Length: 630
Image (cartoon, rainbow, N blue to C red; front, side, top):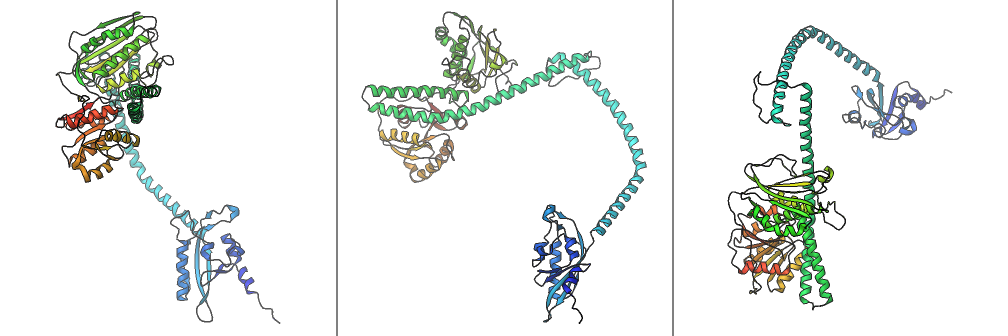
């Protein structure tokens, strides 16, 4: 009997690349040649969807192999007709042993239907030819043709380009000779300008004639240019120093702001406890707490001065008169072993400054000089007027000098002096060269802050064993100016039937202020922020006689809250309480009516300020009013 052929064996051994799919695209048979071409194994692909086995290359966003093949197979199923596809790029994934990378491949596919007994498509024979080598050869041929065409086109242009380049080279040589002549003239002009301008080039040099100067030697020019570079390096170092001081000032101001809130709570509740305690040991302990808090408040005052956030009361003062008023105190502070000399200007040195802060500057500089001469020496305090400060290395954020007369004050000593490294740090808060317990390191920081707020300039000259000279320049004022501060009322009591709206985001401080006012029988409304205050005011703003608010709060600041409420109640009186945020108030203090209570403050100061505003008839005055803390 004839032997039946093994059709599966024949199919799998066929030399072509064949794949048999069901109508739902499951692989049911595959030729050995197809397996070798696609680097797959029969057991890994049978009975799996063709696109699960052969996905698109994920590294090729433009891959279309899956989409094109799927469209062709669907056409075969629907039409029952064979479908011949154009040459396709369909990358093949390498096996696990070779890293599963995709390999670029090109195929020429034909999909033929196999109809079942019912006439429908039962199977699809997917036959492909691997045409990768042919496509690559074709691509290489096109590339060679492109290169050849490019070379031919380039050859046609070379002759004209060579001619053009020769013309350009001639032009370049002529321009180079002209540039050398211009450079020589510029060099000679710089050589002539250098002796006139010292280490700096003139901002607007005059045009010099050919015979107006003698050229400087090349070596001398190099030295002068080196000096010029050194000058700009010095300015760059000064800028870095001023930026560092500015950053430290922001940090110090922020610390002082938070600390002032805490100190206000400590001193406020300590005063309230003292008012209810009988005299004795416990009362004395509470007084010590209060004294320690006030010493801490003095430190925060100096920090705020250094950071230029302190609220000042500037007035036009005669610098000579201020120095004369302090001369007796300074002589007692300096001691008998130091010769103290004052050399005051014969002209009136009228400046605008806070008198207390200016006295603090003079005191700190004099005491610093005294401490630098433990074995005695000479201290000279001098004042005079100048048209403008010279050009020393200012301890300042800017080098520009406004026009107009300036008052200069210098404090010089014959002490041990300082090296350059020490001088670069002396104005930083808490930096000190004194022994432990001999200083806080805030004296010169305070000097720096006060002079900055006065719009002045500050310079230091010192070297080891040669003493030190501190110079201060402050712009002079042409006319007298008066700025009053609120006089707190005496201890007499007023009728307290008014309503006060208190806005403070710090809960302990808000509780203290509200309790002090409530104990004084005021009607108190409290809000934790500006938004809450606006909601309260919408209900009862007509009954509010006074707004007491912090300056800086989350969301709506104190000045912005004042603006919003006064849009409804123009006559609303406002009392700001803060030890900080001078900038938020300075732009309003000339056109708005408000009062300011500096932190930390005592309950008595708070009540005095409130009574002064509600009962002293000052509500119609214009401009900010300042109330000193007690």
